[in-house]
Length: 298
Length: 210
Ligand code: SF4
Ligand code: SF4
Image (cartoon, rainbow over all chains, first blue to last red; front, side):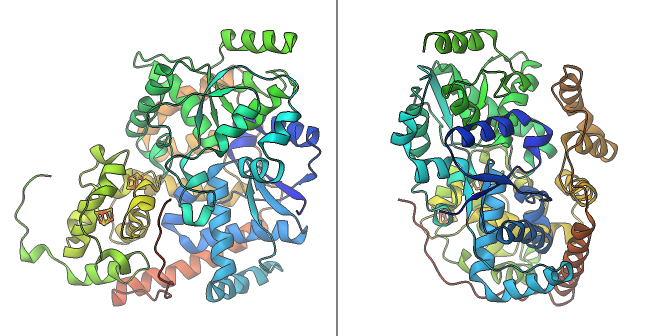
């Protein structure tokens, strides 16, 4: 296994810096070798760039990939959007000699060349494949006996042919990671359904996108969960910010939204503040008390 | 779907051929109208035409209806349709293919304006920040200001960083952008002039989701 370069993207540093901090704490605790990917740009956002301007998308993505190649590290993403953009670009450039030459002709102007020597990883996929739920379970210090609604998010799984993480109908790997931390992953209707944020829909048609979020929140709430655990800051934003937006129309859910890095951080003994839960829009005193109680006992 | 008579005049063969020659388009003729895509789509009830209908409309060359439908803009790119289609068609990619054609044809929509703001912010800062996006986008799209109070309330609670995380040196990025634009311009000129676009052959693969 190669060492990892941490690719943060836009949303994490600018909106949910807690996810960044939690990831770094967790990787260190698990003794994973990582370093920052300095001077990386936006991945660039697939929903925006890929559909409108494919060539700029590929050129910008390849520049980020080359930054990791130059360090001879794999590139670790914490976001389904970054994962999708960079993994797809990496696959396209590795397999299509024509496009690779075209992109390299561009990169030459900034003294870079795409070689195709690294892989793009996602934190969930990395933890599952390279560490595994069993080993992870053994390093848990404060098992969290919580009921969790797991949200995989679309681009972690789909298109399945390119992701190579198994089928998209009933995936289990993320649930296994959540359960390794001592929690119960509660089944709920529409579990693999979209949060509503992607494709530029959140930005351009907020109401439509919130209808999808509402569909999900209703069913999670009905399942009686303590919190939502996700794998992506954009889904995170959609659930966290979406609850604030839905509250304006009288719909209240009060479901804490937790990225898996943060969730694992809690199970490794870091406080809610250390993993940045207080930076969410939805802060539930009840949930934090529960965590405090678990951590005091555990 | 509303029952409408399709007039022969509304069928545009050049548009149909343009789409059918793209990588996703080459599989469209195998669509058997089973509707699995529409049944899998979490937003089909908000669409003018669901993905199944859109595929058929492209086959028929209903250019105006396809490019003006809200379908292509409402798609969240969740890929549910694509992993389930028994013919290995990816309607998601059909939407992505149709967007630039709609823009080249002058169809106005909110996503396109957002895209412009987003690329500007990335070009100047390397990475996008929600603060810059909301403030700049609100200038172009007054509706967007509706999202601002949520952002602002986080600011006032100290939850949104006041500093904007960005790249220190974006000169490299600017070069990449310029090159991309040049290539893209060439391509859309090709589309406009010849009605076709050179695409590379993609190996035929059947996607099945086990
Ligand atoms: S699922 Fe595939 S074959 Fe069936 S209607 Fe949709 S595009 Fe056509
Ligand atoms: S990718 Fe788009 S069209 Fe396909 S199911 Fe998802 S939202 Fe619907």
